[in-house]
Length: 498
Image (tube, rainbow, N blue to C red; front, side):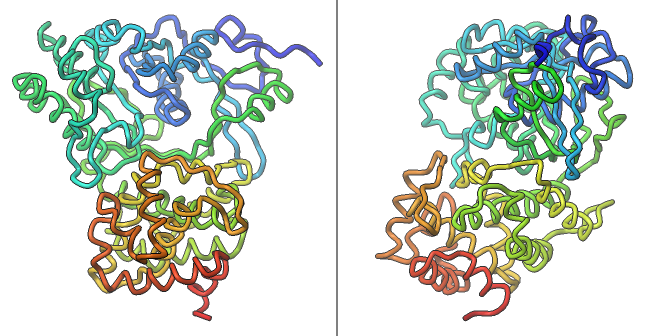
């Protein structure tokens, strides 16, 4: 077997013709964007859109400098440096077709844990015009019960006291903006690319709370001058596996230590509110709108909630991946019924979107057999996901007298999942959640108090006090704990009770 070609700038010209690569001169790029949190999703989404734009227009001022804040980011930093910050995007189509493309928009990477001053200096440079984020829900440091910034976090206390040695994202942003104000520079735009509702508003709220505690006059300047556009982001991007790396080596002859796999679908809807210019991403498919709310609500209540429906029910049944769930007619039917009967009735119309076509496309995307999206990944941090993705649909339907039965079974399944930590056959499930201990403790109290799990107010709010919800929830809990055959309960929901 021929030795695979190692991916780096020098070897770009020697890659197989079947692999697309940058046609622009990367040596001329400047990093107008600093991105914090260079994971798979950033590399399949914002970096992809930017690569498309660089390829199409030849502009040079919108390259990306990645930033990792934690020691855990060292591995990706080292891999990317060895590859001159290049990586392969492996786009897997439902029909089995694979498109490989080398992305060149990422041109540097810095580790804040090694040199925080260098990172804040780079952010404070006039070249930097956007600082974007993918830091996951947990990175925003808010109390899920109150929605307020969590000042009890020891890292917050450290960063407030040591502005020049930050450890959290808000410490870095505040220090960099302090330096820009002192230099008489306009601020950069802060652009969240995370999968949370009103992500720009959330970022603004948390940053202003932190900055107010550290430097009230700076907080006032940030409130007046900095832009925080809301955005809706969408592209299914599973965790890279050893098989993905092996595929590139054996089938295409390329040695890439950390490629990214994704589906062909990609969407980015952004509010056009930037304070120091922006790339013309609309030239390569992004959509700029005055208000992103209806788009993100549609996506969160259908796609993200749909993922959680399949993730929790499928985990207990014994399915391993999203496509495996959708290949099961019972699960596909259950998901579609949830979307039709419970999610759709509480959605506002979305301009330019046919909601029925959108739901059809979701089922097609979920069914892609070449995107092996693990249910364990889908269920990660459910305590921060379900209060945004699913519980608002339940409460809104309760208020309007609508159906909640399909979502109620998901909540009951989550209780069983958190209590037992196994599927219906007793096989151990991998549960990763910042609230894992609290969830388990509350769920384990179910045999003594059927509403024990619901009394986690930080997650469920007042659901435990809604008799119009708890009567059906208790019935499902009784049935599930008597016999954890989740398929039996799903069939009962779909086709009538036994």
